[in-house]
Length: 246
Length: 246
Image 1 (cartoon, chains in turn yellow, orange):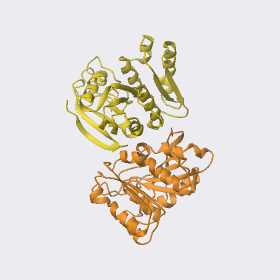
Image 2 (spheres, rainbow over the protein chains, first blue to last red):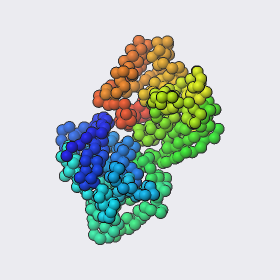
Image 3 (cartoon, one colour):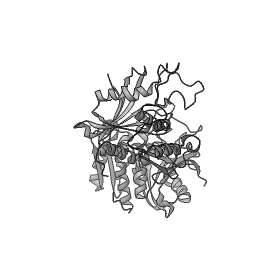
Image 4 (cartoon, chains in turn yellow, cyan):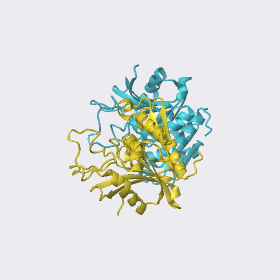
């Protein structure tokens, strides 16, 4: 497995990389971003995954969220994958919908043609990419945690459970040690699409330790993410046994 | 003077705005970004200006630098203007050079045709935009400080001195209370174009309090800016009499 460095820049005493590699799972070249903290010079470090939302690539979270500051403090590697396979032979929605096709892989393995050939993001994120990272980067794969935003927040939950509908999975018996969810109250998608109250209900019924915070006046943007990303990194660091004194 | 809200998003308990207004100085519509901290609900707040580098708009610093976190803590309004006038009747470099014309106003007033009509960024930043902000936003214009990156770092110095060559100005007698300059050692532009050692020499000769820090391994990117922006905001807050206990 060869990782090609697309770019690298020093950031908060660590290095922000973008890598490219040939994926056998998606049958395409894939890019992902990796923040490698200075602590990795001496020992393998825990890994926090961030799955992005619709239309994103590996770049959005990497340049907009300001996550490197706290990842550097806590000694966390942060991996931000792309959201779909890409390339001239990867089919896209014919009408160009932003929520289907390119940039909208939904972290699942498609099952019907023409999608099933390349759209295999579940297996890519769950299996192939961790293997690539474990072979090439100073990552302690025994300590991994996952988060995300929008499509990627749901993807983070289903990948933690290894199937596709987080609320149905809880009803069917899936369990996690804990969940931290922030929801902006002026999020444009809140009333029609997101329904965090359903997640709240099924977690209560199942006894899952969900912390659901409604953040007054915040929307769906990366300004919202940047505001609360430190809390989330500390949450995952704590779950991974990393000291998190601010 | 009418300010049109292009976008707004809650961020670190304040609001990140992008505004548009008709500029009489440039003869175009101009956009600028303004972070308004929560402290401004109760009293006018000090203003820190950030002037961006070549090719940037008001967006780059706003979405990539992570400045809102510390601006929120310190109660600073942060203004990020665009880097040139824009519009179909604004001339650009015929060959499309990135360092002349659109996105490359260099914070000066052009003096020859066809540039002199619209490229009047010095007067825009020094006079018109502060007036607009003072009339429409909760800004305490008696407390202003200015910083920038690359073309904008130089622009910040010349606007503080009101002319165009920072080193020549110091030799000619211009003075400032203090300067904080960070320079990445792996900056691609360092050896051929930037010459911070000249600034260092003239400041030493003139007795100007320059803190010039060479940051090992950092480049010219916004990852570099994001890493050190908190130090710069604290520097300006201190100069403005704002308490800066971390």
